[in-house]
Image 1 (spheres, helix red, strand yellow):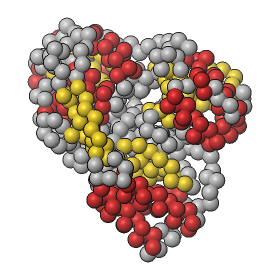
Image 2 (tube, one colour):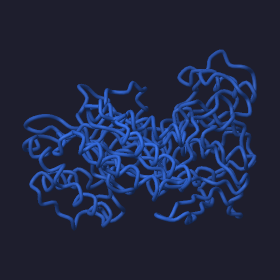
Image 3 (tube, rainbow, N blue to C red):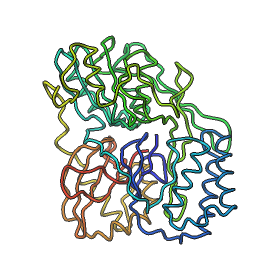
Length: 459
């Protein structure tokens, strides 16, 4: 799962960088919104950054041989003076990304900087834990759109509610065209709806390189019981080039397990999960240290994407899928085709979330967070990044109001927080015991509904 907002750890991260999408398998990130780097950007900084990149590529990149060759490439370029003319962090980050990609061709691998120009992207729709909508269509066909895969503890509540509303449909269309990834366990839980609950199915292996070696550890995911089942029903999955990482895994799993027919365009081609890290001078790097491996094919979709069974422009995929289940509809627009909207986003915040958010902000702004109110993993994140976050929050002044805006895309809640000197959009995730398990924040948009939050996210 890629998560450029989590630059210091691979779990929940408190940071001030920007991401376009949620998720452990995310989309192309947006530029950082950070305080000015405390280290001057000069030849010394460039040399130190190349050293960090080269070491990370040699020690931890998922493919040791490619990692070593990519490290040698950037070191050679530095020694040859190829980077001397790059006078801004953004220009340097773009060149490093290009040089690394020339060797690895890895769409998850990237170097970013706080002064990068904004990358145009289509904002993801507001969802509850990745679930956007569930609808009944003509002919007893169900439709559900999922744009992200939170971990199961956050995913189950919303997904189970959506799938229960579609339980009596005769066929199901699952829209993955805007899904940019998430938790492998979340993917496995959705796959669980389409297999025999009495027979756990081995869904995917995730291999993580052991740092400094050519060896890997392996994590396996399996299906688990679900409240309702769609096993044996016709299932169609819609794909697009925007379908990425964890979204691709679901498509790959369903296709190889022969559980669904894929309709649309070939997906993005990212199968290497990893984590973020700082490089100095405000730059960060997302480093893929793992790879997916299907127990069915022994391979994955890295670099090639998932090829649909029925190729058609993504914009026409819904219309084509419905046509395979009955008469060809006059439109491929779900808003036109829907006969009943069955899924409503949660309208109230998680109990205790607002109070927890206030404590987090006020404690962090003062430089003295109440670590007892944070989960162990998130407390470590806050400690590691307190010196960066505290000045920014302190500069905003006292909290004036906190307003619930919507559920969070990866679980939790979104709030607009107005300060004496500005407004920020926050996302907050609570653990079952009420402790804060993660958060992210960024400038609030000028009007509701909110735009994607910019920082602090699950990795």
